[in-house]
Length: 466
Ligand SMILES: *Cc1c(COP(=O)(O)O)cnc(C)c1O
Image 1 (spheres, helix red, strand yellow):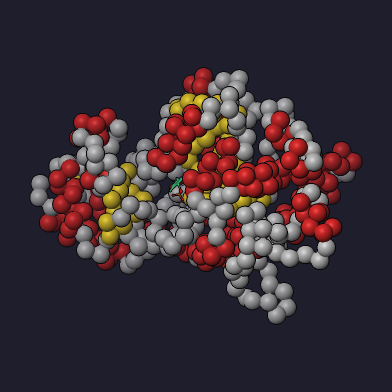
Image 2 (tube, helix red, strand yellow):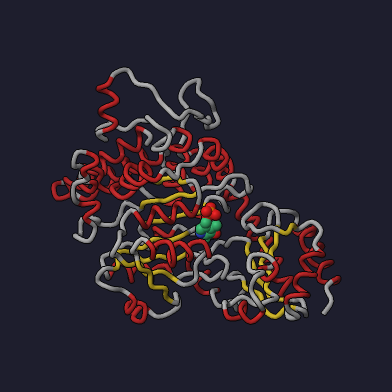
């Protein structure tokens, strides 16, 4: 944890305790100072934060965030080390818990999402796992959208089930009153994705936040496909935001990673979350909500779960992630511009049954896209080749520049045919039952010159039979 985060935590805590005593204007000023300390930046615009938040070199220090490739840190006395272990002072002692390179990246992402703190993990899967396990335990229940990433679905439906955590999956487009029927007395969180991967459906974020808050539980949202450049779910009521940074935040397909961001807004002392509001004996009886105030959730995730489970990113990967995020706004604008052109081009093809891209007027998610992502979306499009499995495979094989890959969100355009790759063990009938048509193609549009992308797609359509 950078020292500034520690100071900010202390300030937040102070604010929580003295709320009744001071007038609003003074409180707002203090809150702004706390946020500045937290993000290491002074009132910067998003694009500027991508470059400057999280790391401010002092006189003579490296301009570029250095890689602190050290597992360990040295101290002058046993007393100084003791204070770290008792969580009385913040500092680095072991890279599993905190590292200066990773810490700078965490501060940057917290600033970009508008949270009070963040925790980087070794992958997106680890972020989802830790974000939920931080507040749910055996006997608890989670409500999740059925329209989520396959890896998250497996984690929730199978691994959590084995751990005694039950999950109810819901159709995210149902009205609030219908969704409420899925909540149980032991429901401890609600989970969904801003833009579902691979379904490309946009979530009504405010509806899900209300669903959770009416039940006094947090709303955890996976914001991977939207990125904080296009959507900051905390502004619409989400409490915890997670990412697979492997996708657009890195953007160059070089480093697997994940992150959990804490909005600092959820009242964990409401009686439903004793893990946060009663003593943790492994730290001499510390109570997270009392000692860490607004940063209780993210501090517990680090000092308890990361300590015990160890899904830590390497400093080298944090460096790559930081490098990627520096150009996030420029890349995302281009991904969106190119994807709109590709979606329109595909829509004009006679051999196509459907195109799914929420940027297209007429798409089922278009209105939600206009509300929550008015400035743009990611580059992932799915479409269906009417003639089915064989024709779709032919189309994919005919591509020259666009690569065949099981990945999305790369700066290079890539495409995938689930029926002959990720889902190849399934028959046409089984695929259709799972909501994946045999002719379905998923394309992740990159940032090449649009003419080259369209030319490659066009020649593949020409070569395809049927
Ligand atoms: C890829 C992905 C994940 C999992 O992330 P990994 O970094 O591959 O572990 C989770 N959620 C979404 C939406 C994803 O696209």
